[in-house]
Image (cartoon, rainbow, N blue to C red):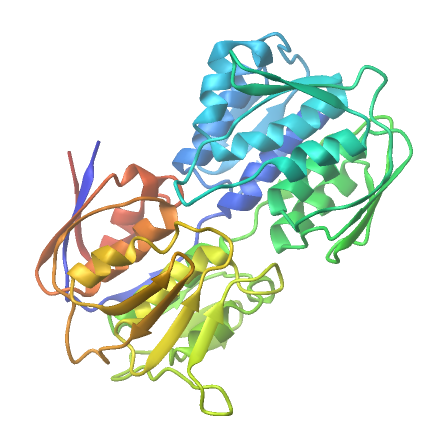
Amino acid sequence: MSKFVIEGGHTLHGEIVPQGAKNEALEVLSAVLLTAEPVHMSNVPEILDVRNLIGLLGDMGVKVIRHSKGDYTFQADNIDTTYVESPDFVAKCAALRGSVMISGPMLSRFNETFFPKPGGDKIGRRRVDTHIEGFVNLGAVYEYDKEKRAYHLRSPKGLKGTYMLLDEASVTGTANIVMAATLAEGTTTIYNAACEPYLQQLCSMLNRMGAKISGVGSNLLTIEGVRELHGTQHRILPDMIEVGSFIGLAAITQSNLTIKDVSYKDLGIIPEAFKRIGVKLEQRGDDIFIPRQESYEIESFIDGSIMTIADAPWPGLTPDLLSVLLVVATQCKGSVLIHQKMFESRLFFVDKLIDMGAQIILCDPHRAVVIGHDHHFRLRAGRMTSPDIRAGIALLLAAMSAKGTSEIDNIEQIDRGYEDIDSRLRSLGAHIERRP
């Protein structure tokens, strides 16, 4: 176990490049199981969750060649299907949320797989019903194995295309069902599908592999099943969550920062969300420049009512950035209601911010009112523990702006989503150390 030691109150400057997108990487890496041919992938983020998934693929028999940092070739031409039934496989999957997306490709290509209850963030209940029901709609059957604590999925006659209306626009659920449907017999129509840029990237990659997916970018996907898929090349998008985190970092430390190569067209409403809490930013080609401001004033709605920032399915605001927006708002001028709709435990980290001097009213597990200090009162340093990836980065931002030296424990949670974050921040002038 390691911790971060952060001396706050330092202004940052310079340029930073976002890593490849974690959420996309977990999807497209799982998709290599759909073909026996090589798949070359670049801009792969070498973060803990991704490294664990790559290791799991290797254990399953996937040939993994690392050409250089973030540059890999994968070939799933000799999968050990017996390993997928082993206690070791189940245990590793249970510790890795992204492992759920292995099941769609395995079921489609090999007609059988185990679907362990996934691990990952402790941010509340995360259902797997959408995944399982999607597979059942395609003709799979399942039973729960109590000893393995995993669902045993089979499709003895192969998967068959069908129409389905998803009960929620689950990103991982949609990705899993799409991958399963690519090799199913007939046509599959998915309504209320997620349409995030990362899912669009997955669909584009699958189409280059020979899949026939239409409606990409909408919530209505049509997949015509094919007999086999082929190899391809794919480059992962910049991580929009890192881009948003760095915008927040610049604002809470009152710094001039440039974020390079952000794929601005794929950021959706994220820049606008930061503008609503008073953060000015400029698009410069495919870069974002955030100028230093003396004050960041939170907007009100047109009728004068308090600003509300809430998450929503794409193209709405991603829930992964609400923690960052909340902590930045503690140093803005004005008040804002943060409404986290999807996960009932994700706002509980605000107790740590309140201990640091933030003025926050936690209304219930989903809503918090933030009354900003306008940088007139700096947060106090403290000792904290990171409960999940996104709360962890929010606490790190708070510590960067706080007066004094803070410590953050359980930083392995932050490492799951942010690659080499301490050295990258030091390059901007941050005073941060990683210690045992």
